[in-house]
Length: 183
Image (cartoon, rainbow, N blue to C red; front, side):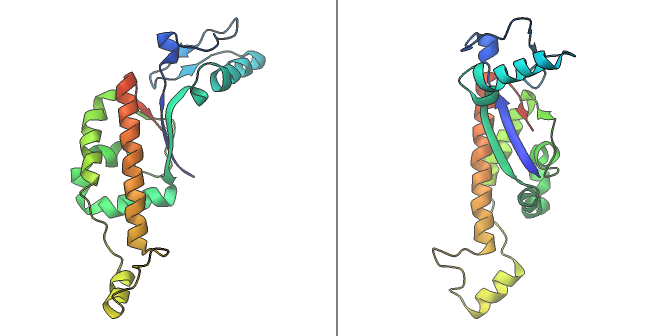
């Protein structure tokens, strides 16, 4: 289990489809920016899904950007690291990392400016060293300073930098097409 995030492309709305939808299929634009097709006919539904996933446009599954932000444990690690400063990250805590596996919801475009400011602030955040790391470094100052072996706090910092980079990419994509970030 984990947290995935994506932004739907706008190829359907802008008429930039490689292939039009199959006959008898009239996609609906949903509030999250994606396309759906309501039918009780399984064959028609599968034709729509195949078209949407593989044939509609240049973007896989009609997603402009698609990221695995982390598994449930890594998202919990971010929450834990930021916990003492959560008042500085209300959108991030309340809409993105409130748990590590939410799905089926989205962050509307009206939140993108606030989220962008919070994600930028992540760059100034320093990861806390664990008690074990601090103890080991008090006895052995070079502990964890090798290139091939990283301290847990250094691995956490690398993960936070990657998370920040992915969030910036999602925000930029959402702004470029005027669509929400989906989870």
